[in-house]
Image 1 (tube, rainbow, N blue to C red):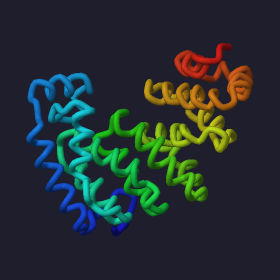
Image 2 (image 1 turned 180 degrees about the vertical axis):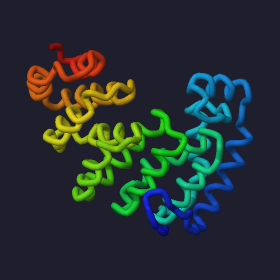
Image 3 (image 1 turned 135 degrees about the vertical axis):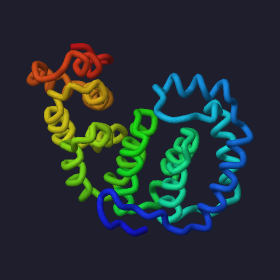
Image 4 (image 1 turned 135 degrees about the horizontal axis):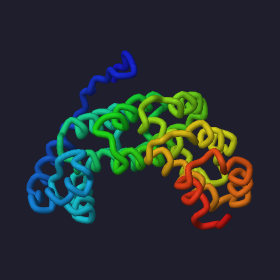
Length: 240
């Protein structure tokens, strides 16, 4: 993979990607259902066309696609993800997200620009949130120096990049950097976008499962800076 700038990524050559994409496009296309596709596209606010494959069936097909294939390296993951994202139908993007979730441990910190490309291309919560919690979160946990990148992402003009920074610690539990978590929430507390306000509440609600008192104390001090939506989400399971 050659990274020449934030927006420039080349799809690397990968024999594994050739095999996976050939299998994937064959079995997914054969399972397409136009009626379900139209309904899914409408439900997802026309973010992308769909093939109309229900999730359980799609994941069963995905298992058949990767059956017998070797474990990927970072180049393979890059090629598979970027090539899936070049296809218009959303199910191919879902395949890439699931594949990366499974193999993020095979990727180094150098994979982060690839995830940014996915986050900022055909952006919607259905792919961004999983990439944030399972891929970006995994990369940052493996290489804590990437927290400085998250510090930049939280102030990014792209709301999906900022949302990713908010959500990347979603699965960290006791390993959560609470200083950053709370600072990120405060940094975006005045944002008017629903998806940012919702993410603030979500990441606080998730951390409240680990340390409810910390979240209560934080909101007791700072509640007035947050939208009601964020506060409701944050306190949903622990009360005021």
